[in-house]
Amino acid sequence: MGKKNTRESGSHSRYLWMSVTVLALFGVYFVLNGNGATRGPGLASTLPTQNSPSTAPAFRLTDIQGRPVALSDFRGKVVILDFWATWCPPCRREIPDFISLQSQYKDKGLQIVGVALDEPEKVGAFAKSWGMNYPVLLGNDEVSALYGGISGIPTTFIIDRKGNIVEKFEGFTDKSVFESEIQRLLSSSS
Image (cartoon, rainbow, N blue to C red; front, top):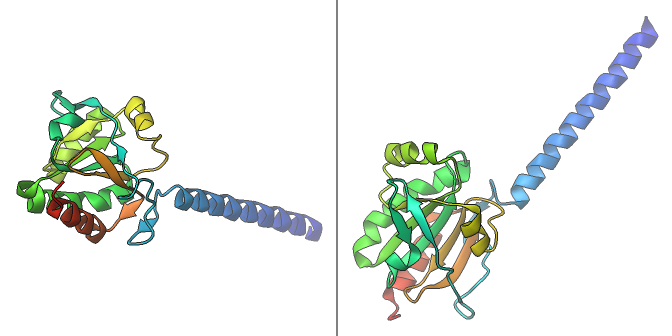
C-alpha cells in the first residue's frame, strides 16, 4: 500500500506542476500580447510618431444601427480609433474614459470611433447599456489587416486632423495619456 501512495503522490505532483506551468505560459502570452498589460506614459507601443506619421488607411464599415460610416466622414477632426471587443476586460476599462473624453472634447474637434471585433448581436446591446456616446462600428478582418493586423485588443490609433496616424497604443492605456495627445493635437494649427 505504501508504494501505491508514493506513486499517486508523485503522479499528483507532476499534474500539479504541469498545470502551474501551463497557467504561467498563458499568463506570459496574454501579457506579451497586450491583453491585460496596463500601459501608461512611456510604456505604450508607438509605431508612427509625429516625426514619421503615416496616412490612416481609408475604410467603410457599418455602425450598430446598420448605417455605413467611412473614416473620411471625420476628416478635419482628431480621431481616436479604438479596436475593442465586449468580452475584453482592458477594453471595458477604457470605455468610460472614452465616453468622458468624447463629452469633454467633442465640440473642440475630437471624434472617438470604436471598431468592435466581436459578434454583431452583442455589440449593440453592450454599447447601449454602457452609454457609448460615440460611433461604434462593426469591424472585420479586412479593416484589421489595413491597420497592420490587430494582434491584441484594445489597440488604439490617434489620427490627426490631416488624417495621419501619429500614435498607436496596444493594451490598456490611461486616460491621461490620451488626453495629453488630444490636447496637443487640438491646439496645433493642422
